[in-house]
Structures are given as C-alpha cells and as structure tokens.
Length: 356
Image (cartoon, rainbow, N blue to C red):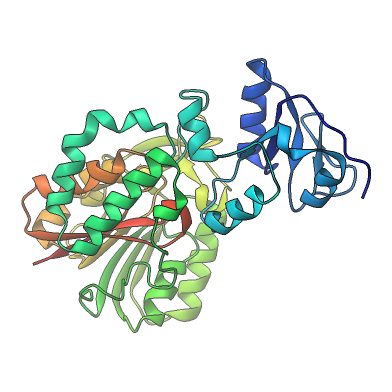
C-alpha cells in the first residue's frame, strides 16, 4: 500500500452512478469539497465529473478516512444496504451518510426519486398514514407499513424486514387469485409477470398487456407467442392513464421507462375503461412508474363492475404508499388490503387488494 496522507474534512461519494453524480454536483455547487468517488467497479484511471473514481482498497491506500465523511449514494432495489453499510463503517470514516440521511440533511437539494424524499414530507400526512394502518387486513402489513415509514424518515435500513423476492404478484402468505386468470397487465415489460404467474401454477383464460416501450413490447409479444400460443392475448404498445391521449414518455430505460414531461418520445395512452370493453378481468396488475393513480381512475368502471384482484406498485412516489389504497378504499368495493415488499429498500412494495 502507498503512503497515507491526512486531508482536510471533505466528502467522498461511495457509488459513481447517477445518484452519486447528482449528489456530487449538488455538494460542489453549494461550496462543499468533494475529493472523489469510491466504487467497487472502478477501473484504473477512471474519472467522473473530473474527479478520481477508485476502488475501496485503492482509495484507502491513498487517504486517511477518519477525517472524511462518506455519502453512500446507492438507491437500488438489488442492493442489500445493511451489510454494505457495515462494511463501509468498518473502513473508519469520520461519518457514514446513507442516501436517506443525505435527503434529510440536505432537504430539497435533489428532486424526489421514486419513494426517496426528506423526512419532513411525511408529517402532514400522519392522519392518512394512520387511516391506512387501520385499513390493512393483517398484522404483517401493519408492521411493514410502520417499518417502511420509519426507514424512509430515518434511513435505518435495519428496521426493514427481509423482502420476499420470488412471490411478487402471487404472495405466498395471501389468498390466491382466481384461476384461470383473465389478466390485465399494465407495465407488462417483456412478459416477466406472465412467466412468473405461470410458474406459480396460474393459467390464463385471456390476457390484455400494455407496454409502451417498443423494445420491451417486442420482447413481450415474442414471449407470449412462444409460451402461450393458444391463449387469447391482446398486446397494446400503449401506456395506461385516466383518459386516452398522447403523452410524453422516456423510452428505452428498461424497467424504468416512464411517462414524464421530459420524455424523449410521445406515446399513446389509453384508459382501461375505454380500451377493454367487456373484458371482465379477475386480476389487474400495475407497475407503471408512478402513473398508477391515473391508471386506476381510468379503470374505475371496470374495477367497480368486476371487482378483480389488484396488484399495484406503491413505491414510485412517496405519497402513493397511502394515496393509492385509500383511493381504492373510498370506492367502497369490499376489498381486503395487504402490502408486501419484494426487493430491497422498499422498492417493489406492492398493494394487494383482494375482494371479499
């Protein structure tokens, strides 16, 4: 190892991805010193924003960590943060700040991202969160809600229960959906949910799948043709919303392709009530990057007339945690409401509304 040298107090960013670059840019613009990035995938000589990107070992060989604060700029459904943070703390930094704590320390520094916002966001909604707690049908859901709110306001990753990865949309501890399925898949991606349900011993009587990203859509059609050649299926290269209209869309972002005013293309969106007349679904899934409330409103007549099971993403916006279940409950359709978590850090947090 090389000779270590002390440095004046500064920040180093752990993670040189998009979130790390955003945090670095904010800190430098606000007059704070950032010495560089640490990243386990760093390559020799790599830089970002004009700063060095080093592996943990390479960075420790050149710096004394006890005078440096590290910001762990990782906001990723696939990363188990608790052991990672333990490893980073063991490196001996003066302070370890995770991404939730960063948003709390520097509120409004960066835009909200998925569920990520500062703790002050939640206080005005305490009554709504309490109403949701009373609405939930089992103690596991209530405990998960409390853990989610505490984690999102404090950054305590240790408060979260382990997610269940393999039973999304067919939660193993909840009543099963009707089988065979008349399934509406909103945000069908490449057909992965269809495949997942099939592996859970569900059969399909009919499928209506919506996927506006053309690359994903083509993979979806290919999968249905190959795996379900005899199942009636309608595939729509469209988004879903409260009404049928053209909207801006950020395409070719994989699972993160989403509606938005800064989108790189225009897509057709449709309301389910208008696009699927007399389809009679018994299950509707929505994972549509924040468009869920509008899409539910656009499917309200269908939901009221058919009372299908609902599997709805709650993690794309902080307020969706309570807004979506309370909206559905206000329709008084006699559903039981559950929440389950299927990825790390409250990503893939889903509402399961099961008709009585």
